[in-house]
Image (cartoon, rainbow over all chains, first blue to last red; front, side, top):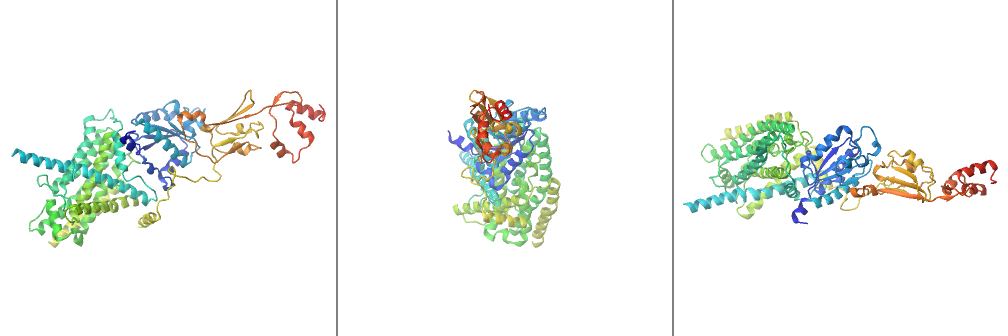
Length: 142
Length: 324
Length: 166
């Protein structure tokens, strides 16, 4: 791996997409970002407000029919190379909302997912572990 | 003679691109930014990113794809960050480093610096409006309102220092930064004079708004307007905006040092002292402030600038004029 | 001013950040994490599948016996299965290292096969009650209970009517 790639992999910027989540996982993501105990900035991570700045996208929620098109469009707006992390069981499999009339289903049917972090919600350490795995995947794409 | 001309041009180019503009200012700016993020993390009881994190971010951004929105005005959209960067590299070459670097009078003086300082804000506005995004437009209008509010005090502070130096040297005003620095090297820094403190405070209040730092980062607020003008930028152009803001931090802080406390030994120790001053000013004036205070609303910020820094700047100007 | 004092105090006290992912972290004592299934203790009552909120537990009959399957990717870790399991064949461990790559998505399962037994009466295939369950239901066993345990439900009913004589 080249020197440049080794430097770039130390700056993964995070972007959150809430695909109809109950906010449980979003609270854990906020905890991971904001509480000094789980400082993700050590990994060079930074939450960004625009999808166009993102490298690693964290998706929470069971992908409801109402947000499906918007989520897919947001995903298209993230420049390559990018990595997707499904946080919580809802985006992975539908979780407790599976087979609901309002839910489109597991998110990997619609866009490529790279890392899954199961939990309802996962604890902050598990999310950090997922981000660390995502950085490994991202390094290979750089 | 053509030979003389070319060597002059070369030294000017060197000043703009390598030292003290361009490369040198960029390195200093990135380290300052890294220090700022690290101290902010410590103040919040976090560990924080590595010191060179801003550099890593830049390298990463250079490797990302560039997306241009369909409705954007493509040439303007891509030119805006370059204009901002070039103006800041030029401005960095205009500001003396006491005891080390004296700008060529050919390049310009305080007034040119004043104009160049306005260019990054204008570049951001152009970027926001050229991107075609409604968030960009909101950021554009906020940037403009904020600029109208802080340019007044800035102008008055610069005039105060110019008049003070001019009167002391028997003239009326001196807009030459080299003259201002030389006068203070000989007669002591303006910061030691209590009558100059209002002007210094007004200048301190000016740079959070100019550098886009909390509590005045309203145009680029990521939680409200999704980073405003920068929303549609990705990859290398976004990296250029980061370069611009790093350069701008160095320019504004160096300007503050040149105007108020430029006393320093000559040669390499002078450079060290300058860097030390930059670090202290950046950590005390920027990091602590942005960690301690939350973001203001745009109307509060404009009102704040029209009240306090304006009053301080007027008081500073009046003090200099009456004492003379 | 208060804020500045707070910042100074923070600076003096140093970071409170956990070493994870570069070092160890803490795990709360009663954390509900990865699920373990012990087929030796399972009686096949399927109450766990009935109470499961995320529909994560499935039972199916195979040639080897009754197969229990739990998919961690739809489990809410609510602990209801462990609560309702009489013999505690299901146990939620404190292992939270569940993040995995996409190719392992369907490998995130816990599986166990409850071995079938032959009925002592008619010889049919059945899932025998486990000793742990008998110990829960009757403080001390006797010969009659031990005999009933080796019978399938049909034979047990007959034995109940005839008073144990087959």
